Every structure is written in C-alpha cells, then in structure tokens.
Image (cartoon, rainbow, N blue to C red; front, top):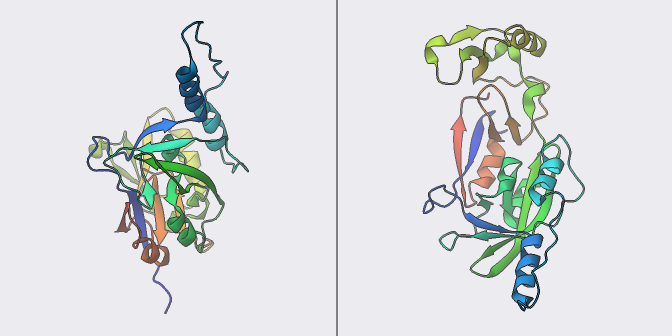
Length: 246
C-alpha cells in the first residue's frame, strides 16, 4: 500500500542548555585560524601585521548561497565549534549557514540521498566538539520550493494587515498564481500580507519528499510521509504532522 499523502514539518531542536538554542558556539574560519597562528608566532619586536581580505567570508557565502543557484564548490569553511554542552546530532543548529539550508550528519545525508529532494547539493564541513574534529558532516543546500505546484483554486488564502492583526483578516480566493500576483500588485500600498491556512498541492507536483514553501506565512520545510518515517530515527530534529499542506 502506498503512503498516504500526508506531510510533516521539520524543526531542528538544537541545544536546550543555551539561551538561543544554538549548538554552535563559534565559527573558526581559515582567516581566523591564520590570525591565531601569526599571533602565537609574533615576538613583539615589530608591529603585528595581518592582511584583511577585501570581502568578508560571510559576504562570500551570502553571494554564493542567497540566490537560486547551486555552486559547484564553496570557500573553505573551516571549523564550526560546538558548545561543550552540545552533542554530535544528525541535524545541527546555530550556524550562519542555517539561513540557507541544513547542517546534517553523514547518516542523515545517506538517508536523504535516497529520496526526491529536487535540486540540491551537499557540501562537506567539519564540526568540532571539545577539540575533536568530526569530518562526517555536510551542509545541505536545497532549492526545492513548491510555489509553482500549488493548486490555488483549492487552497485557503486570506489577507491581513501585518502578521498579528487578526481583526483585519479577510478571506481571499485565487484561481491561479497570476491572480494572486495581480492582487498583490493592486494592493501593494495597503501593507497587506497574503497568508494561507491550507495549501493544496497540484496534480503536477513532482512528489518531492523534502521541500519548502517560502511564502504565505509558512516558511517551513515539509517532508513526505515516507521520508519522515526514516528521519524519525535521527537525532536533533522534531517532526510534526501538519495539515497546512495537503
């Protein structure tokens, strides 16, 4: 029997002992490591000299990852240092990379690679805990956004002033994506948000097992039922059945 068409949301748990919930305490980039090395070798007899790059490494990564592209390679990341109270989990929370994708273990990569992720790529990186370098980690950049596979006519949309003014909520109907775009254009000066309580995926949906919907107040990662059955075995995440996507 085929898995039912139900979906789950994925949340990275992180470290409950830190205020932010982050597992990563520090990013030790190659530039910082080089500066530390030179400082240790500095004999104080002459001024300390260190050439700063014209562009920060964070800016380099942002230029490469913020768009709708999958770079063949990334600049050397260096090491991501965990808090001592953190653990090596299959999903890691707390890096600047989280805004572009997920940090996953080799075990998680092995499972994910067996499913339909759409356009994606894994980049190797190192996670360090208490001086031990664990090289069995990867950064997952996935470009699978399902906006183009929404059945607008059978989805539930509403407009709202801001994100918290529930009193201004008003039901809206759109038969096509073009109608929604036109509505937004016509009301662009009204500061209206188009939100959704239910997204119906169209018949053209390619059955992605791992995808995002970065709009309508959702901004979450959704998993197929069959993928969730495998990921539930992993550490560092919480999977929750959702009715926001059907």
